[in-house]
Length: 399
Image 1 (cartoon, rainbow, N blue to C red):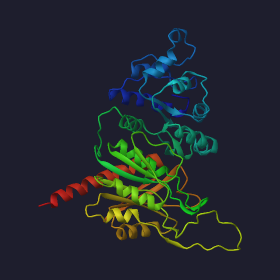
Image 2 (image 1 turned 90 degrees about the vertical axis):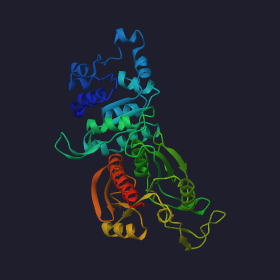
Image 3 (image 1 turned 180 degrees about the vertical axis):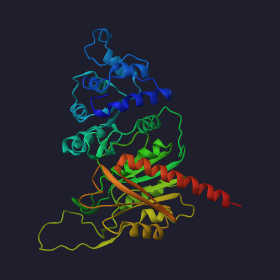
């Protein structure tokens, strides 16, 4: 743990992990000791706290390497902006950063800081860099902060962190509401070529789709992620299929759809594509250029129209009249659920946060605003519940 005010939650997190059968070794930074005394962690973990890289007794046996090898998971909660920056820079100035760099096990961070600090471009860049290297971020969440402000930056609650950490363990028995089910998720944008160097695309970063794939895996599913071109690390335990165009996404989804119980179409697929792509780069010779566009194949509608379709979830990203357009899409494409959000220059695409409302035939649920990883878990809970109810309903209707 590092030195943030959210450190008061960390003893409860240790207690929840030990209650679920985990062995927990606490490593504290010097700043963390100013918030919670080591004796508290010794009491809840049953182990002496480690907090000094220069501990002669421990380091006589290369203690920091021993710790790095011992851990099956390394979880930093809370993870401050300073620590995130140090880890992104590969610095090993204390015991905690040294363990994180020396370990070959998965590293998880639960960020906690003021909302303005979390939004700072340097912090966001460091987080993206760490995620690209395979570090997993849990949160942060949104809400009241110790400084009196309200926004994104709160450390997730201990129960949420423990659930996510244990659910993703590859050596753990597969449990969860979607245990053993095949789930196909689409994510990211598509690129529709104009010529060999130009294409039509959109602002989708793919983060929401990747977060949903991770949430489905945590819920016990066998997940296939069909993604357009994005710069994101594949979630642990997820099988990734890379595509570029809408036609490629359509084809690969239909190759994977056999045996699929849940299909979640989060990708921002181009609705139209150039009728013909030039074989060579188009030169700037004329004052105007006209492109003939034709409709791209509709992957979501085609899956929903299969003779025995999986439970199908679509997304509606709208600039206005969000509820109206989402409900129309639900009916028009004959899908089971639609998750809708507003997009524009100040929301939706290419951001770490989102705001969702879910619609289905005869119901809706507001999931609110939050980090995309948090919203993905909320949405997956709703999807799993609706899927299980639909399966029971079909079973009851069978002769």
